[in-house]
Image (tube, rainbow, N blue to C red):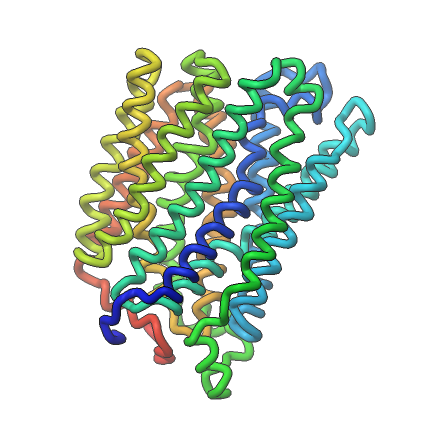
Length: 435
């Protein structure tokens, strides 16, 4: 492991700008889901049943996940070959263009079936952009900060992504507060998308001030460390790292998609809260998750990944199942349980600690991106459709699903306690294959 130096002012700048940029881009990606119940009737035929509109709307949300592997793998390839920083900026630019396009998109009443088709295409462009953002950010900061601070740094980035969700829920709540239901349906739903496009362009500008990582700079100076086909090397030599990263991404995707992005809709449809109450509840819970992901990253640095995921999985299971079991009791109870669930979901702050160590530097971006995006496409993308469908059978379906995810986290913790040396290597120029 590299020397235990303290965080410098430059490290703090990298963390701050990376987390802020990630927050703005993630806001662009998730604002869609906070207006799912409004967007659905506007972009689908009016005679469709409400439950089918909701499923198809979340299906469009899932489309953004399904295209993530392609965008993520392409950007990761060039990130490993020509530089982390360039791909870091490109992902934000693509996201901004897609989000502004959504803000201007005509509805079904104006262009018929072309409306949902264009919506899907723009959502896919967003997915391609976000596919390079998260793995790129984890790679970027892990190669800047001291190795013994990687958990904290990546947890801070996860907190930045949570901030994007918080911004989205607060702005959505503000729209529902200022405008009437009819005004939101007529035009006000477009405002958050306009804001998201502007936020994205600001993020592109901010990332101009970031420098390339020292690890990639060293790789450029030694041609032997540059892999011509990083993904081929990942699939040949690092399959074990891919499997662990896929399972960890499943834990992360469930923690984000179900407990924040979908729950405001569940609070309306299942527990009969108003849109404003549901969005404020989501904002409140996300605020606690924002803090908890940083704490989670700091803890995994200190106690190691095995014990962290074993204990964290138990806390995650208990807090999430309690929320979905008792959220309908009253508004104060819902807020209190959402705060506890937000703390439990802080478990996801420790996920990148393992993933950035699972692949050596020359193929790190590609290994991370492939594992993360394929898992998110299949598991994160299908989760909204599956859970929404199961809710029609059992209203407690989100709680049972997250109880299983908590058990999966505990299992991963037990495995890492005994086999972490097969997964976690050094952050620096470790080129030896891990089998």
